[in-house]
Each structure stands twice: as structure tokens, then as C-alpha cells.
Image 1 (cartoon, helix red, strand yellow):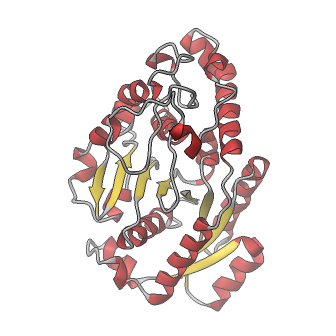
Image 2 (cartoon, rainbow, N blue to C red):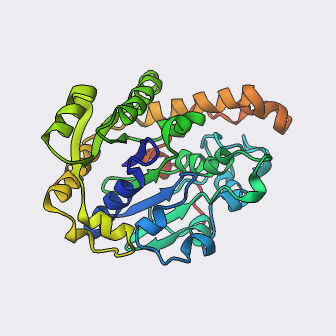
Length: 326
């Protein structure tokens, strides 16, 4: 199952993404965590060494490798250079699993506390004025357009804050999206904005209350978001210790907050999956990007990259034409 954490900047979405990832890793579930936020803090929140963000390779800097590998033997894609962030998988494409060996994972993925981890990479000084951060996030969209996650496997993505999540079709790539919401009008405002954008695409949304102090906070959130409120996290000494550099085992989290993590897992596990809609949405955003800018940039009609008979999902892994090279 694939999930994203979104919300207002400072709401605690990275913290909750890390807690959820640790919860899954502690249960020895296959989990792949991806930091797609412009502020790259997920590795540290997971307990990575201080030097990790600066030393580990990133998805953003290895886009040529990612494109070349995923292209595989797909005859509809003339070259790796013609692939863009929305290029969907088709017959002959190389598909990914959550846990496997392949050149992309070998180069860009590392283990942190029992979870597989990758980062898009920071928005560096050299990018200022000449690049868009969403070009880096495009690497994540490409991965998810070619990834088949099975039962009991998890992908957790920490997204950019606020409405920036809608700068690409990435927001549709998930089975359930967790929107982290503080008991404040500003945070609720982001929820309403997100809800307005997401409703036209069938995005399933669950609100996670965070930094809740008392029953009044819970009542406020319930009044503002209604049945979308899945659970709440109390203010946490465990989290405060981690923010001071004292990263403790997830089992040391307060019982009520551990129960909230399990509620989130149950909601994700029971979320319906529709691989056909997933593929349709990937194609929809690819065609939009092709018409808006990519056809002119690449110099060809990228609608030709769409395989009308292909549906991403478990059955695609079993097709004879699918070449999985490691």
C-alpha cells in the first residue's frame, strides 16, 4: 500500500511520517520511505546519522539512471532522454517491487532502522533561479508509475507542504493520503484547500490530528473536518526527545500515540485499490504535461508513449513481455 503525508508547514507531517515508518519497520513489514519534501528532514527523523543527508546519493541527481532502467525494452519510448516525470509504464517497461535488487535501489536507497529509504535531494544553491524543485520530485513520480507494491508492503512518502503537493500528478499516486492537521484555523485551511483539489481525482484522505492537548482540541478538529478525522496524536515527550537528538525506539512512544499509529495502519490496509484508475490517472497527467510543455521540450508527441492496453499491477509482473533485469 502507498501513502503520502501532507499538511501545512510545521504541522508535524515529517514527524508522523517517520513515526509511521518506524512503526512498520518495528513490525518487520517491508517499508520503503521516500523524502519528497523540499526540506529534507525525514532521514534525520528516522534516526539516520547526522552526515546522512549530505553524503547519501539522491534520486534527483540520478534521473538519467532511473529513466534508462525503467524504460527497459518499451518500444513506445524512443530514448531515456524522451522520458519525463509523468511517463507511464507500458509493455516492455521494467517494473519495480518494494523490496528487490536493481541498479536504482543499489545507487539511491539505503537502510535506516529497518526501513528502505531514498530522498529526492535538497534544493541547492545551484538550483536557484534556474530549476524547479518539482523536477527533483519527478523522480518519485516516475518510480511510483513503475512500482507494483504487494499485500503487506508499504511505501511512505513525505510530500512538500501545503498546496505545493499539487504541482504534479504525484498526489494521485497513493491508496490513502494522511493529512496532518493541528487544531488551528490555519491548518484546517490547508485541509480544506487540499480537499478541494483532491475531490475531482478521487483521492482518499484521512485527517490525523497532531499536537492535541485536550478534549477541546479534538472537538475543534471534529467540528472542522467531520468524519475525515481518523485519529489524533497527543503532544509527545518522545517526539520532543527526538527533536533534541535523543532518538528512542518506537516502542517507547506513548501508548495512546502507538494506538493512533495502529489505527492509521488499519485504515491503510483496508483502503480499496484500483489499479485501472491508477493507470488512467497516470496517463491523464502525462498527456496534460505533454501538451503543456513536454512535446515542445522533447521535440516529439509524447502521447505516443502511452500503451492503451497496459495496466500497472500484479498481473503486469507476470506477463511474458515484462523483462526484469537486475
